[in-house]
Image 1 (cartoon, helix red, strand yellow):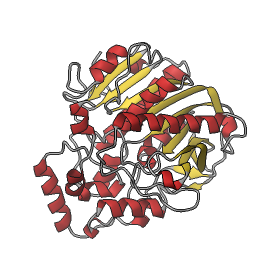
Image 2 (cartoon, helix red, strand yellow; image 1 turned 30 degrees about the horizontal axis):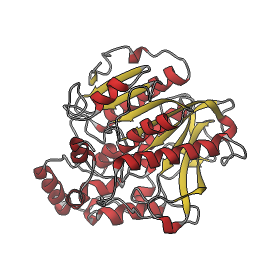
Image 3 (cartoon, rainbow, N blue to C red; image 1 turned 120 degrees about the vertical axis):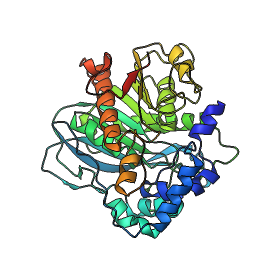
Image 4 (tube, rainbow, N blue to C red; image 1 turned 90 degrees about the vertical axis):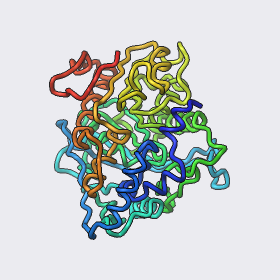
Length: 400
């Protein structure tokens, strides 16, 4: 495994303890590259701060449709759970987000109370932060449970979150994609994050978050690829597992992932030819694809400076050279590892420090470029945004 990948994408137990205050608000890990002085100052500030009330709100979708939401539970009877074999067959919780009729359905919670409690229990957030299971679960998502679907068929985009991050941390992207005419499957990778509420109502703990010595990130990405292929099977074949599966155009499937989820997008494309386009958002490849393995469209969207710049220390250069289809490599000035998820925005709303790139801009850029990429590769709609630098997005740098 690449040394830089280990250092920058794997979260040590020491880093988790040091960063507990700043990560707990959203149930995700932080990159181990945060300067120690910042870590200690953040923890001290959080401990000394007066009790506040956290009220999280994600940005509204920008497309013409509303975002409907269903949560489904799947069991792969042909595969034992890779992390906790004693639990039996692999169980997955998946949030389906789809183009819906505005004004229908009821506001969907960000997560269950069990998932929110798992976040706070793992991260040990101080009471002074004002974040509780209730207000974390109640973050405004702009998704609506049981909303009436728009008619028609739409491409399917599967989303996979970062290591330790529950699936909800890509909700901003999911709702926006749905509003622009995509069905989105947010896959919860059980036992790989702070908690996913399963079909029996119990919330799974994380079995691998403390980085056990036997954990291999290549195997983790490959396991996620198996999860995703199984989800695609259940959404597109035979007696489908979702009541609205008729909305899916099974011939137009893409995948985007953040961090290890981005590595999983590449691993899934190598293993499953049904996935026609992929996006890696700021994740090391585990492993980097070999020439000839991915000859379909791929977008690499990441944070600067050296990790994801041409000739940097990460394995993006190796992956770029191997990619054989339409491809783009973009970096975003001022971004950090979590600018491509909901995390930085919710940290800001909880009163914690954020990177130079405003969290709002991080969400806007992620949404615009990922949607443009899938518009071009799955819908055949040319997007000038992908042709080169844009005056409206000066932070976005085209590396190749």
